[in-house]
Image (cartoon, rainbow, N blue to C red):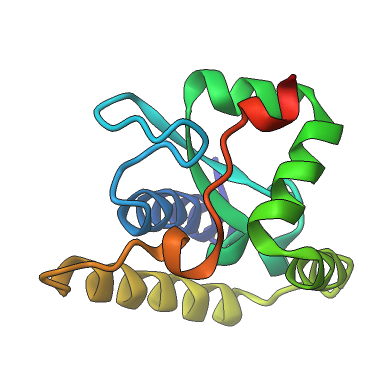
Length: 146
């Protein structure tokens, strides 16, 4: 049976996925494809690092194929992440992820509320800006796989 803490983490994971997909207008950020099954991918650090686990700048929506390529090719993933985020932001996310402080349940609940608010803000925008076009240059995977 899952603990209260584990249940909150699972809810936050689902909210993070929803936020990443909404912020990318349900588009694969590697290929530009819409209408394909998408997954939320952590650019810098995997899910075990709670300080960056639900950080939008560390998330990108990818098709299943693109996600598989990045998950199994850490060098390509790092190059792509640095290109999207820029070296400074990429290094910032790495530094944040290195913080190994236990996060109490009340802070996890605050994070869950923050994610819900952020999702609601994205949903209510009538003309959502393309988050990735504003914050990053769009880079196709093919530039790093050749």
